[in-house]
Length: 529
Image (cartoon, rainbow, N blue to C red; front, side, top):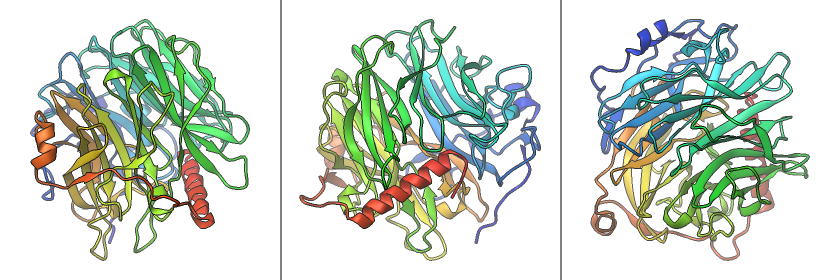
């Protein structure tokens, strides 16, 4: 069924003809779109062999993965998007592409930063890496956009390999980018992974980057770097939390609330007979100079997603969290978790903290169809406290010969007690996603808000039979009257669910959780199972 579009490759054609690409007509969306949708990514223009090394693994041309979206707080019509372009099966992509919109996402101008050789990196700058991945964006109150990349060459922790966390700035809404600055650059003894970047929402001088720095396949602390000069310079990267032998952090994310910088992450414990994971948080009251002891947010029991007919593995957001800060310093966190089904399949778990990460609520399930697999959640909170969660699920996977997947959004106006569901897109065939240790749309997707409207940015596969995917932005129904929409708009309204009393994971389910953790760690290290 699959006609895989492989091949050697792709560098930006004249590095995107001096950034002239992307200004043409908007491409029509696939016919199964449920709401207004605009394709942000475009067919690749990379030149074959642009990465400058002998290929390993399979290259999937014209695939987009793992998108990110940021909104300029001073101009909500100015959106900045980023994604991986041309995914490799054994880790990373040929390059990260960026795009800027000044009309609220209706049209986009394609651009780039020199995060890898295919997007302008080379011996004369810090972007001299073969591949890039894990793009993250943040916009300061003054409108300066910060973009973070994990750039690397070679398989992690193997002789001759290298990796770095690079950050570039755009002063003009994402149209042009500075040469990247290195926050850290390492050889084969370390691997820097899963970075995120956050801008202080009130002081443009401050921005924060955080990631895990692996010393082995199963060990590594949280690393942190901070600028107090609006990105002109960054303080030296350093460890802010080391979980110890046989343990690592993963998916570190910074949330900034009044008086606090909070790092929320997954801690994986490989020191026992079986692996386990928990969501944890640490706080800083001095812009990251010192940090508290960790607080456990919740156990994390993701088993991961599989095609129920074939058993094919999906590389989803298992063992990663999504974090967003709301008014009054309330923090919200979502993740995949199987606790609500007794370890049978993952749903979407939500918890919140009213005090900046010190205490946390009992997790509740917030995906609308709890009987089916749901995965890769993303959360975003508006200034009025209304929040939304996007995710994929398999409720429409009923046709043999394909793996049908939909993208959904649920909204809560009452702090997470009740929700209203909207269909964003699908069903599309997940079998047409690149295989990177599992069918891969990204370890995360993205969600932002502007002018009262939530703006999901996500990847879906394209119609046809080729392995291809693109990044799309959706425009769900206006949310200015979100409370009335939740009560009366078409779609499913439902209450959040807690795990049934006395429901515990069986030993077999805990083994599935441990196996899921093993797959996650293997995939992040480019050593796909």
